Length: 189
Image 1 (tube, rainbow, N blue to C red):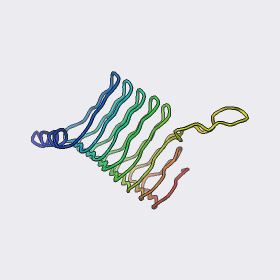
Image 2: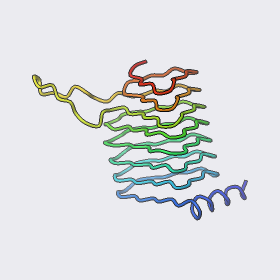
Image 3: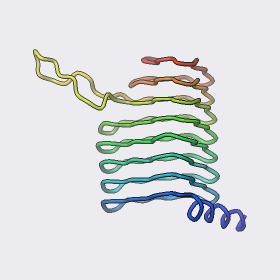
Image 4: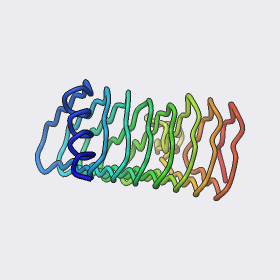
């Protein structure tokens, strides 16, 4: 166990071509033993953000961007994130990816105050997946002058397979043991 920890730390920090830039205070990155990063970039601009990555997880060619404060990113045990971006913006957002989930290439963005994206255990995501809980811009009703497109949480159950080129939009709930076919745009439950 000790030898594996030493090898994974050497691989991640010496050979891994990783970059970490943190601006702000109270930010924490906690990784368990046997976590490996390769060509991974972590950029934090804000305060009191938490990144937790559990034992055995592997990230390669992945960017983690946190803009704002009090966000929480958690990757469970043995998560494989091979390429893509994890983005948390505004304040108090959560992205949680369950144990044993494999992601080939995904853009996952929680973009508005207290927004959540919860992904279950043992999921399998193909290439070019886009998961966003908001539009990243406002749409204003011209008569009332009030915003009409607020973000909504996304919940993906356990053992879900998302085929390549899927778009998972705000408010989506995908039940356990589901398959979403290639090039689907999912807008509801």
